[in-house]
Image (tube, rainbow, N blue to C red; front, top):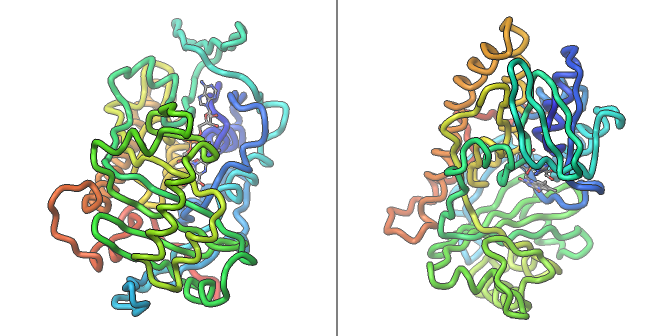
Length: 384
Ligand SMILES: Cc1cc2nc3c(=O)[nH]c(=O)nc-3n(C[C@H](O)[C@H](O)[C@H](O)COP(=O)(O)OP(=O)(O)OC[C@H]3O[C@@H](n4cnc5c(N)ncnc54)[C@H](O)[C@@H]3O)c2cc1C
């Protein structure tokens, strides 16, 4: 079996299928370690369970619990509380155990898939370096800009939702004690018109994600660097113009609770991301299966990208275990995960609807209650 993409979905698929007795090889485009690039991540009970099954234990000590979601007004007053058992962690804390669980010999780096061909009973991956590999199944875990999906479903592309997210991680020592205290054991929401900020603790500090509506005519400017070069809808953080970072920090002081604003102000290098979502109408094409972000991308409000990737991997592995042929297994996988993918994307659109710039009835308490995807992904049980 060939797995294209060696991030969360590819590693999980590789680990689970290897345990089930498949001969697996994972091909990853990046040459170095991915761990340094991640930020904050939601942990669900399903994520913990599938990681354990993959032989990659999620260390609960690397998660930070969120026992309640609170809505904090600009004055600092908490006007709504909703009890939850969510857990936040850092992307690397999920990636690293999965990476360690897969033997180095079957994780091939600096391998960029160029295209796929299929023959009777086999599928072949053709790589940019001219090499190729064949197997009876190819799993496309190559993310939102999947080369494999673009080959089979060229019309499917991520759709911009008319808002962006500014994100940032700040180490604990950079933060005032009151800010850390205000975030302890909780996820803090703050709402300004057309905006929603979430602030939380992560293992070694705190993290924010700040959604802001962007009018159509200002989008290009946000993703244009100081030399005037436009980067489409994704810009490398060091190229974000300093004046935009300054505006973000000034705006934080103007609209956020005084105890939360230092988290944004202290962030040396915020990240900027256009919020998109994407749905694939099919997940399987002959002997090819799409998993993780290659198949569906939900907006980040469901805090479920990694969980969904792991659940796709589990569903594929289970389908291959119960069905006698690859074709029957892929049909079973597709019918389960198409529905799941559609539902999680739909829920993420509902949670972000107020940020799209259309007139909507704002009800922050409802958003806070429904945040995540409580009907699809379960909170992590508390151990104490
Ligand atoms: C470095 C990195 C950091 C991230 N950090 C966060 C985070 O902090 N918080 C969060 O919520 N989500 C984060 N994500 C996204 C998150 O991993 C996904 O939303 C989710 O876990 C599903 O993962 P995935 O494996 O399907 O896709 P991705 O994680 O996007 O992985 C796709 C992988 O495929 C590889 N690839 C792409 N094209 C090719 C090709 N042609 N040939 C071979 N390999 C290819 C990419 O290099 C990448 O490693 C991050 C992703 C990456 C790659």
